[in-house]
Amino acid sequence: MRLLSALPENMSPLRLCVPGEKLCSVGDCNQGTGVYQRHGYIYSSLAGYVMRKNEGEELPVISVVRETEALLLPDVGAIVTCKVTGINSRFAKVHILYVGSTPLKDRFRGTIRKEDVRESEKDKVDIYKSFRPGDIVLAKVISLGDVQSTYLLTTAENELGVVVAHSEAGAQMIPISWREMQCPQTNAKEFRKVARVQPEYLEA
Amino acid sequence: MAGLELLSDQGYRLDGRKATELRKVQARMGVFAQADGSAYLEQGNTKALAVVYGPHEMRGSRSRALHDRAVINCQYSMATFSTAERKRRPHGDRKSTEMSLHLKQTFEAAVMTQLFPRSQIDIYVKILQSDGGNYSVCVNAATLAVIDAGIPMRDYVCACTVGFVDETPLADLCYAEESGGVSSLALALLPRGGQIALVQMDARLHQDHLETLIEAAMTACKSVSKVLDEVVRQHLQEASVLSRE
Image 1 (cartoon, rainbow over the protein chains, first blue to last red):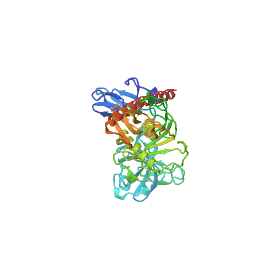
Image 2 (cartoon, rainbow over the protein chains, first blue to last red; image 1 turned 45 degrees about the vertical axis):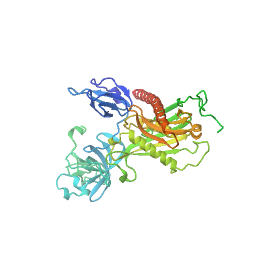
Image 3 (tube, rainbow over the protein chains, first blue to last red; image 1 turned 90 degrees about the vertical axis):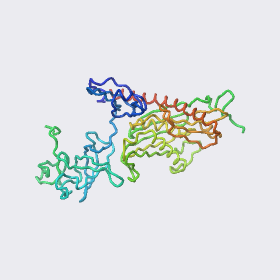
Image 4 (spheres, rainbow over the protein chains, first blue to last red; image 1 turned 120 degrees about the horizontal axis):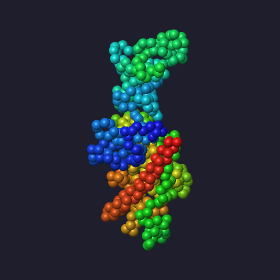
C-alpha cells in the first residue's frame, strides 16, 4: 500500500522474487532483511519485492519486502510496549503488544522483575507503587527467557516505565513526577514508575 | 495377475499419461483470511488444504521451546469423505502421526527457523480428496502456505511420488497405481540447490534401480517447482495490483 506509492529516489524499480532465487553475489551488495547468504551469493528467502537501497559510499543494501507487515519477534534490546496483566510482590506480568511501533499479531508474555523496575535503590522497590494491572508500559527486552520463564523486560531507565494509567476512579491520569500520577477527576495522587516521554513524541 | 495394466505396450498408464508425465496441478494461495498463510492445491484428483499459523509464542509446554530456533508443529489429517469408502478417521491414528512427523522433518530443513528463537510455527494440512500421492500433495500445498504467511524459507520444497514398473519409473502415482503393487518412493526436494529434504519408501526395490528412481523423482519435483513458481508470481502480481487501487 504505502510501500509502493512512496518510493524514494535512491531506490531502483522493484521486481518480484521468490524464495531461493539468486539475487546477487556477496561482493555487490550488503545483506538486508528477507535474504540469506550461501556459497558467496545472496538468495531471497521471501516472496516479495527486491529493494536495493543505496547508502552513500558503502555497498547498496539489498532486501526483500512483502506487501504486508514483516514478521516481528521481540529481540534483545528492543523497546516494546506492553500491558500489565498481573502483579505480585516480586514481579509484574505483562503482555507485549508492540515492538517499536509495529503491532504484533499475537501477544507475547513478559515479566518485569522487582530489581529491574528502576536504577536506584533496586531492593527497596514496591511493585504496588510502580505498576498496576491495566497500565501501558514502555520497557526494554533484556532476555528471551529460558525453559522456566517468559521474556524478561526492564524499565530501569528514565525513558521507560508507565505511559498510560487509569486511576481507581477510572480516569486517565496525568504524570506529575517520575514517581506519581494524578487523577484529573478526584485529584488523588497515585504512585507509578512514570516514563519520561521524549518531547518529540508528545503531541502539541 | 489379471487386471488393468499399469503401463501399456505403447507406454500409456491407466489414466492415459505417459511415464514421466505429472497430473494437472492447480493451486491458489491466500484462501483463508484469518490464518497467517493458507493454500489450496489440487494434483489430479488429490486435493489438499494447508494452513499456517506463526511464528507465535510457544503454546502448551514451554519446556519444548528451543532456545535458538522455532519449533515446527505439523498436523496431517484426512477428511472422512476423502476416500472411496467413508471411514471414521480419528486424528491420532498411526498413519496421520507418521505423516505429520515426515512433514515436520521436511519443513525443518527448508524453513529458516534460526530467525525465530523460542517460538512456534504451526502447519496444518488436510486432505479433502485422496487419489494417491498424499504426502507429496501435502508438501506442495504446505510450501505455498508457508510462502503466503511470509515465513522465510531457503527454497521451495517440492515433492513427488514415483513408482517402478517394468523397468520404467512412473512419476506422480495415482491411487490405482499405488495400490496396484508398485514400489513407490516419495521424495521432497529443494529444487534450486538440488538438495533432498526427505526420501521415504516402504516397498521392495532392487538396489540397481534406486539411482534411476531417485533421478526420475528429482526431475518430477523440478517440474512441480516450475508450476508452483508460476502460482506464487501470479499471486504476488494480483496482490500488488489490488493494493495499488
